[in-house]
Image 1 (cartoon, rainbow, N blue to C red):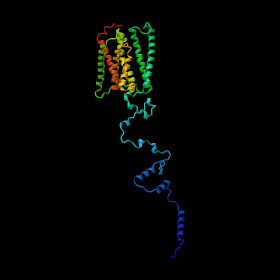
Image 2: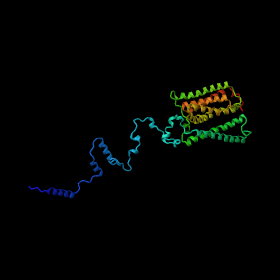
Image 3: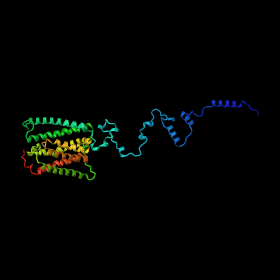
Image 4: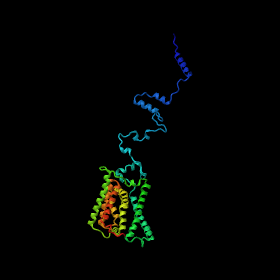
Length: 366
């Protein structure tokens, strides 16, 4: 057999022509498959990660992120690496209240932690100043209108009340109007502007004691008010009576004394506890601490009654102690209802003692 030095070349040319003329049996592979075939085969976790990345929409095998896909930078770090333990505070983060809308979440969420919940109210010193201005204007306007109305109706013979009876009639008309006007102003500021429940935000809520049943807490407040009335009455007798106190003019006749007693038992505790312990105390306690807020509220409470006491320093000091005690009860129970019960039982016990002594029965009818 003789060898052909060119036989290999002719066989190779024949094989190439057959491959070109034969139809394609397999479709062309994609770039991803071709690039994948060029990569070395891997096994274990790396192979599984490579397979998942290739199957994930919007991500190619080169690591680039397609438009519209979600990358790791778009996911919060807490979602990628959750904490090992999340306490109850993480599930109970409050939503922003209307008055906190101008704070970012990181700013306002840290604010209530430093203060007690019963002091976390939406108003501050500016609202207290506006209440004072509004109250003064309301007193001036109401006094003028009521005096004109009583004079025009012939109830008073001169402009403005003069005698005890005229003063009691003026008080009967004027005080409810003032109380209602100020309470409506507070309702507008708290409920209509801030969107908060009126009585609940002012801490008018049931007592929830820890070491006693609720009925015992209510009885303790009532009994404490009666005990405080006995102590104050004894101290007043020791200090002596100031004959020039304007409040004593209401005890000249039976009808004026009755009007004063109804006002002091029914209306005064509701109004004063709402304004002093509900609206004023939280602002002062946030500014000066609990002890400072209790003392400051008691001082304001006593000074507001100085006109009724004729400027008697000893009786004003005694009433300041009453105000401090009432505020202390409100701070300790975190409820205005508690101080209201002490207040109404305090005034009610003094009224009952006055009636039981026979002094009321011996007063002239009018």
